[in-house]
Length: 141
Image 1 (cartoon, helix red, strand yellow):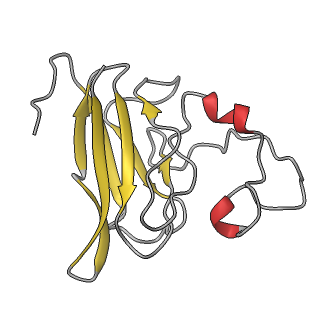
Image 2 (tube, rainbow, N blue to C red; image 1 turned 30 degrees about the vertical axis):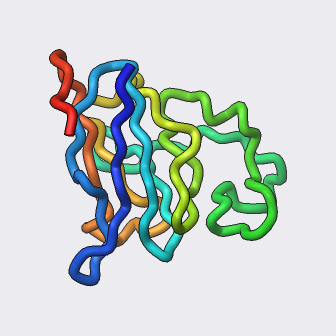
């Protein structure tokens, strides 16, 4: 199964996903590498362009899910809850790569292309991307 990298980059004063549109086969792996000086978190959008419900289970209901909002402590979610099909990645610190990698699937209610945005910066239109599920292997770079 091929692995497809997407970089989170700073270009012309804007942060974006590069490439913004990635082709992949079902069961391929996609991961994000953060080359910026901010944390980011790719998060899936539904067919209407709305963020999917956070599938993670909180350990402490009085704290936020997102480890980006809660440094330097551990993430406030059960790591086993990462395994749902709509989960793309934990928060990605500057200079780090996503974990876990996203195993390309089409969860119920999601269509191809899979659209996503940065959950940390939801109002930045430049921080949006897609993963299109194809039937032929994408060309390698």
